[in-house]
Length: 82
Image (cartoon, rainbow, N blue to C red):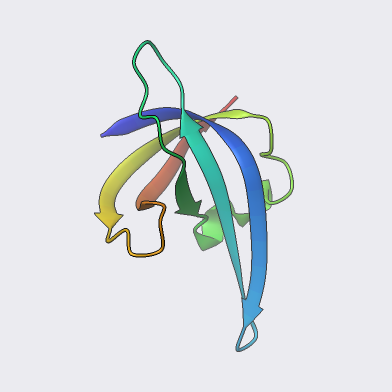
């Protein structure tokens, strides 16, 4: 599934010497999902860190993780940054 979304926020955390970058997005379009979702940048996408807030992105979604923390967590890859 491909989702077009706007990036609303970015969170960077470090654990055990590894950096995790998560962006919070809201789908855009004619009838979007009315819930924010989180997407964790993969290692090869971390060059976008700090540059995505306020940007439109396209995400190729492979899986949606359980939503126990409130927001769905999507995994896949960033296929386009505008």
